[in-house]
Image 1: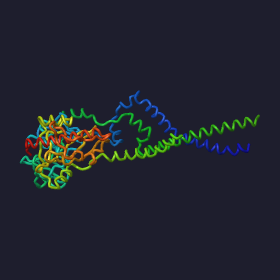
Image 2: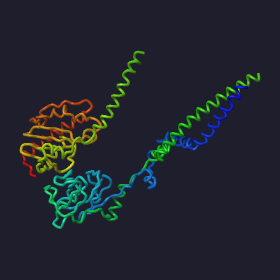
Image 3: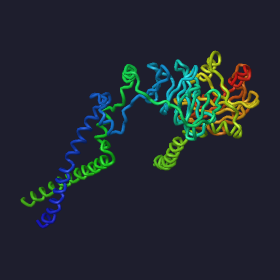
Image 4: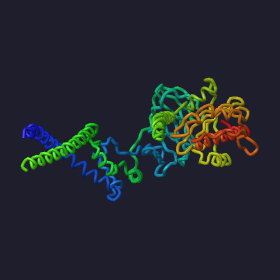
Length: 258
Length: 183
């Protein structure tokens, strides 16, 4: 009897902890159970096939919607979507991972500039040459233009130069030119290329997985899920302990009554 | 029991080796030297004007045959000073291009260096024990390398890419010496 009295407050306290912690993590346990079950049937439910692309969700994941950049080049448009290049609506085989700054047309070639390279294309869009760090141009390229004499003008971190990419002889000039800039393209071209690049999306599986792990809510989300997992472990252990102790007490009381 | 002990003794060194290997392979990828720096080093800072060779017609066919891929562009830059020419070539190892620099004098490779390595395996080709095998290599009558290059276990495709690029560099040098392709 004395033994019962000694154990009861401990058991009650454990039971209270078990109950309150159970209530605290109940919602998270439901979330874990539902998302876990869904993830177990990813293929059957087609979660990896369903793509979601609402802008708020993409923004939440830090994904910027993809837009094309269109550069006019005297009757043609050179555009860039991600690393894809198009001359008008024809895809080019060359991939350009870094952003283009501008495009100008020289006799028998199109010249596109990025910060550290010049791309020379035939009027049909075939890559003639990719000039990495063109000789004679110091610093990164910041803008490209064509002057009234039809010469290529490049603005770099260290000033403006004029010349021809074939000769690689650049002459310093005062920095004033009408620099090539992205422009709004004809609506038909925009529509055609936008259809080829529907933009980024996320598979539903990714979102459920991130919901399951808590990563959807960043570092705090995953920490919360970690804590929930620990509390669930504690609840499982405390539940078993409560059950075992009660069983033990019941047996003892039965023996005492006999 | 003896087996378990042996396994226990082997497990830790093997785990450490595996970790070291994974760390090394991650760091093995990258730009070892930029092509510009390589050219500058070869010519001791006095870099001659770049010349160009058009990869068209028979030369384009040769390029496709040797490197087993389309020429990425219509013309290729190279640098020449007297009998010495410098070539920067790219070839796919397994999935990604390997960039290498070649210095040729009188139809023989004098210097070979891996400049940019983008693959996850096969980076051992960057080391001199491998690249020195190309020293003084030229072309035989069948327009193949006249030296045999030892393979490296686990780097077969990278070795093949280097072998093909060395052969292509010699063929390009031979082409420009024969045709005197103009700047």
